[in-house]
Amino acid sequence: DKIMQQAEAYLHYHQNVLQRAARARPDGNFKALWQQAASSMVHLGTLSRQFPHFSAMVAGHLRHVVDQILEKAKQVALGELAGPTLQDIEEIAVEIDLAMDMFEMSKCSEVLKVEVRQAVAERDPEFVVKRVQQISQQFRAQLFSLHDMGVAALQEIQQMDPAQKEVDGGIQWQFQGRRGEHYNDFKKESSDQVEEGYQKWVAAGKPNTVNERRITIAVQVPTARRGSTRQLQDCRYGSNCRSKGDPDHCARFKHPGETADTTDSTKVENKLSIDFSLMSQLTVGVRGSLRNLHRKVLPNPPTLAAKPFLDGTLKEIGDFQLNTQQH
Image (tube, rainbow, N blue to C red):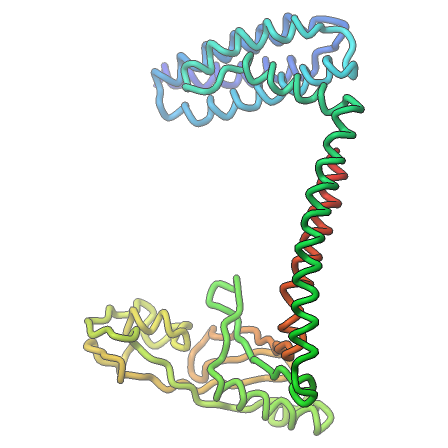
């Protein structure tokens, strides 16, 4: 315990050394404080070998030190930081290398030379001009490719029957996934049923009374994946499970009233209460099963034909703006 206390005290001391180095004035004791920080990192590396659970913390400190030194080196090379010389910072980097060797990291002094050289090159007007020309050539080549895609999409749309151009892409109702990260599609018959109820609610003026804004539909939820016949585990939430309407969940777990042996033909019927005013669904009889709904308007045939061209155009414009801003 005493050794551990001493180790933790040294970690605290090292943090203070780093803070003093970070606040070092360029025209003052900059080099001395950063050499002290580098020496402290070497001692911390030795400490982490004696106490492995300190390794991750020490490695984090080391990466922080390296990032700061690299940034200082680039500032000095670009004339943005007066006082220390590039040679001063290179000497500090060599001392930091001793600590980096303990963690089998790339040497700070080698990384410093590469990043300084790149930073100086990127400030060279000739480099900037060449890079912009290269980006422009790449963009021009992509434009030719996009032009061909656009011509092909236009020809496809022109060859469509007039009636096909007027076809509505349809509506797909979706419910929020269990973790809220994405939306899942209702099956077509269920989606059509929800859309029918939605249109009636809209035609009625979107009333907000409970009975008029809600409908109840029944959905068949398979309790096993296709082609499987196996034992299902008991769901630990039992009858209070909030995921009875999730096919993936029901393919793995059984609930009270369901049999342990299941095949493709085994299905559970759930009743969903759909609230159009709140755009939500609730599995009837299951607490905490509230999920958000989304009414997705599907693209019509002409839009589908033009989508690859439009998506490609937007991507290329975005990439071009990003590349030119960086240089």
